[in-house]
Picture 1 (cartoon, rainbow, N blue to C red):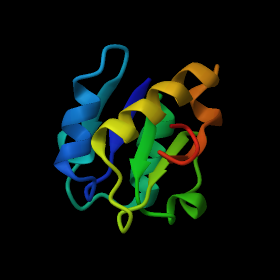
Picture 2: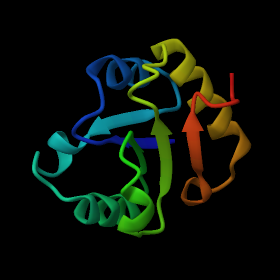
Picture 3: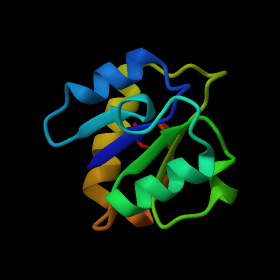
Picture 4: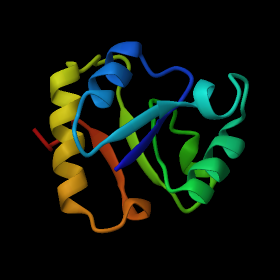
Length: 108
């Protein structure tokens, strides 16, 4: 799975995802620009086969045929729980573009 972490994704999640075999994780800052809009991020994710990792539910309206992983910033889930959920989600879906899940949600 290829995961595009939005600008506000905590470094602890980005780093944890980057350490997992079978997951390629990067940030918006690395592939676009820091002030990229949600629509630009969604379009980039769709065009390049990325699943967006974010706490921003605006991505539901930003459109695009890309996967979406939402974490709850207030709950501040543990990095290990987020990684475990993402790994389970990756195994459960055949197409990344079908993914619309909360992490960790009920995945751990």
